[in-house]
Image (cartoon, rainbow, N blue to C red; front, side, top):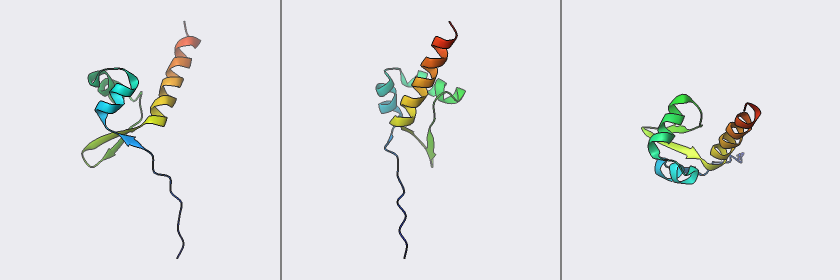
Length: 68
């Protein structure tokens, strides 16, 4: 039997993700609906990866500074 090493991301809930980004939950939902932040849907639940949130913030920051 072969085992596979699958890395499962550390997922956080919406309230924790908003706190992590230092924004309101409503703003996080708006960003999610615009496609600006990545998320996972597990059944009816929404979860976020801290690593992917940080990457999205870095990309948004680079774009902001690239276009004054």
